[in-house]
Image (cartoon, rainbow, N blue to C red; front, side, top):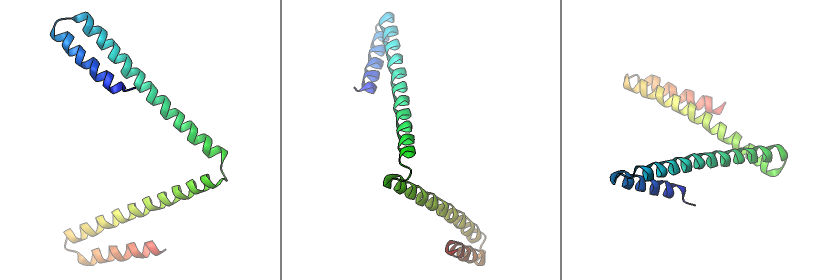
Length: 120
């Protein structure tokens, strides 16, 4: 069901009711729209909770299974990539500062330090 479409339709009818002075219709439409918005938020929250519980269940049930091992490997690789990206961002900032200050030797040293750190 297209809840956002229903919400937009309610907004349209609220505006029409207000324009022609139908306060009871306006208030009823407003109540309906608020109820739909609240229910939609609760449904989304429930879906997120189910997804979290499903993920937790799969993780607890298959700690040594192929899928979980692969998931762990992917998570580890992602964490390592994030760490490398952070180191690279810091190095780029050091290089930029050195270049801005016309201190070329510091820029070269930052690049060398980055590659030495990368290899170890």
